[in-house]
Length: 539
Image 1: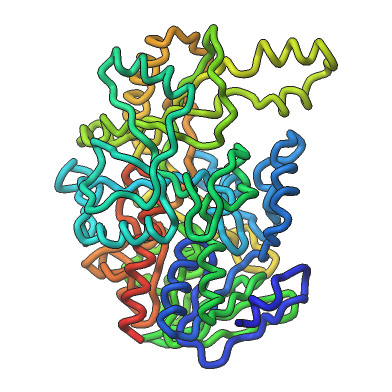
Image 2: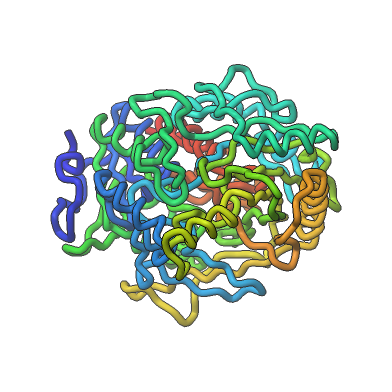
């Protein structure tokens, strides 16, 4: 058993955070990408050490975190103890980007509070320039990634059924789909009348017992915490990597990557107990779409004056996120919202109609529209019978749809270093310069039109809409260390190794050349497995 497995952190200074001697691989980041890479390489017999900036959370605290999540006093970042100083950032773009609303720094990363939807990108997403006339083509296509997608579904544990609009598959998902919800049946009647097809949502949560974890028991608080462990999070593979001999070091933010002209020599990190250097033969940066480019930019030197692995000048550039489109209202009948904390039905029917003018988008049928009864009760002034009567009137009749929309990569949307603000260690915080393209705004309008048609067919009173003027991000950070064949126009090659350094690899959504409109985690996981394969061969 590794030393980290022997001593899950219970406070500052309680764990051994000194470097591991003779490490083959140093993985930076313990989210889904880093955890999968660490697990695969440790199981292959390599000496692996993982460094993560945040703490290691005690699994026994999850019920307490759930209680915190359902109380209106706490916002989402408070559930997983966001640190405003540690997680500080600035914004210089035309739109404010609320970076800390939906990220977790700690072992497990943002999968600790994600919703858990795991779709494959469509075939045309890999060839956006050729197929749609916008963006760029990836250096790999769907067929290249298809076996890794299947392996990723097995690793995470995915429940899902047939999708007539999805890309081709060779085998079913590991678990059967979750059955449609009651409100899905209401939507289905309207969609049938309109000729709109609904199908199941692939979820990284257990519809039956899987991989030693329980079936979903319906807590309904998937975002921001699953107390049962039925929803996958990256601690599954962190623990698996430890069983294979890996060492996990938490509260160890890497400050810079020391290097010469050809290779990284050490990851320099700070802990509550001091400063250290972790040496290794190979380094995998898996710190997400914001902190990955920031670390490379902070690691500038005489060899790389514009930032490590940045001879192209593309580190930090082409920051992308999915945009949200939504429409909701109320019905004169119960919709039973709030019993299920995740989506069970969606539609990709219009996804592949994308072209230069309108991008790909998917439609989502919500199971959690409107206020929760707990929130309503705790924020009101009435009690007893009056409270019960009010809750009966306002709870359970809401209904809503959402949707994700692609944004086009733009050089004017990027992650840089702040010129004014520094973190607790004196380093510039990440600066988010986020822009939204006109095609994405037109796509939101198109999604809203379809959502309105469905709700009107249902007979709902539409009471709100998130359109082009109100849209916000889905918190899917992509594109900031682009993958490509041309070293002058990308940061990593098709194997996820940087063009500039032989022993530096990047496993992250930051390598996505385009984003499509699918939740990115399954593609992150598939690419992480591909990256691990490359590192294993290099060792």
